[in-house]
Image 1 (cartoon, one colour):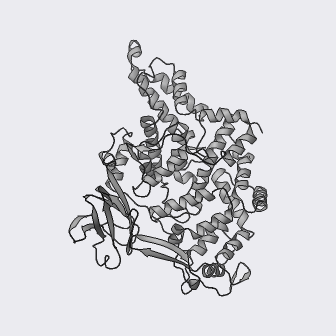
Image 2: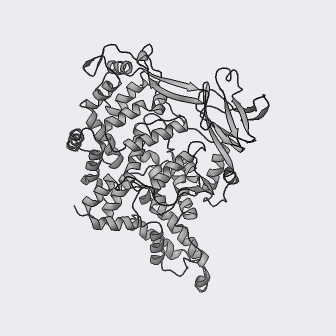
Image 3: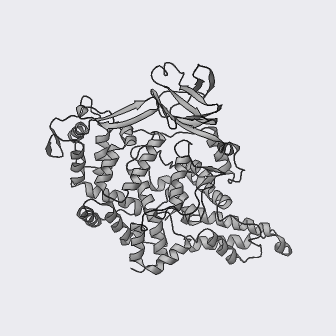
Length: 133
Length: 440
């Protein structure tokens, strides 16, 4: 028998908030976070050793919400920077089978996505995303 | 066999996600054969989605990129499909060929494949599963080469997917060699393709399940599905999703013969299971625990409630069945394992959700406090889709209704509509979460 994979991805604060609302009878008002999503483009990203999978390689200008899932074994993060290397934002360190989001307002252009932990970027965890008008 | 609304409800829950009152009445009149034909074959022209597409406070679902929307996308299909058995089989195959921890677009692609193959040839389904990128990455079949054959997929292929027994470690190693050759290619944005490369395939002679030769991928799949243990294995596995009591040896033999005679087609086997008298045993005492997905999708479907919130994703997570994320390659633990204390708490939260956001929510002025206990019960029961309720539960709820206003001066009852509405919300919640509602 092979060692079987197990475990669940645990969402963070969003999950806790939703569960509290559910426990209270789901009578809470619509979450502001979800309302904001209406004006936001989400970009799913999967991280593992040592590459990113970007589910949407091109987005329109505006607020871009990076939804990072760490499918790997190591801790990873996501840094968004301009092509010139100016850092615009960074998720926290994301443990194995956990997730994080990072929302940024981005103008048209090409942006680098990297994991800046250890030598992960050099080993392949770097890619780009294009923001269009 | 007589054919009543209770039979229709049993069949619709086991083969799908429950029956609305109109469906129960209508199909009871049409009879057993017509109902089974409709359930098994689906509507002419294939499945469609009925009713409004989800808009979560103005935004459309984005299944690939927004976490949780993949789950909502699938639950929405379960609620709105005109071919529930196809969705049920998709869920069953997702458990049988459990795959997890893969990028969402790959999981969605696998889900579409499982749906396309849900009721067709098992051999064709197995072929597509074997070549499916999410599965190949999950069980390390991708990049298993002649120099380093990986045994994960070969082992689960025999143990979990097709046989369960009747093979040896030597067979596993031979199958692993025969399955080599799939090679992945990535670019800077992720997986580009998984392709078969003959130069990475072990084309040497192997002996698998008694057959010797230069065996390849399709030879392995042909051999495992032709093995004498395959049909009884698959029959018992599929039966367990539909009927709580294990099949007798004679039933397994009969269903295996049906499956083999059809050329390993899934639909005739499922039709035979859904026609079996055991499925309709004890109509007044359901004995199969609804898995969380069926409980949730069924509660929404049978009450005419469409998705307008993202809470169902979180609830399924807490109930212990997150679609696209089974706990292991063996799938989920079924039946009573679903009923942990935490999961039950979430099932109660789902009742709150339906009563708060769903069609059964209580409108102001709709439920005066002057209704008799029987009228109050009847109104609540109708509002939640006339589910099966035992005599004992009904009696308990009418007792609750009878004494709900005991603290209220009788002279005030005419003007205490809000208390009548509170009673209705309570009754509807309890009907959605009572012991009978957890079973089908």
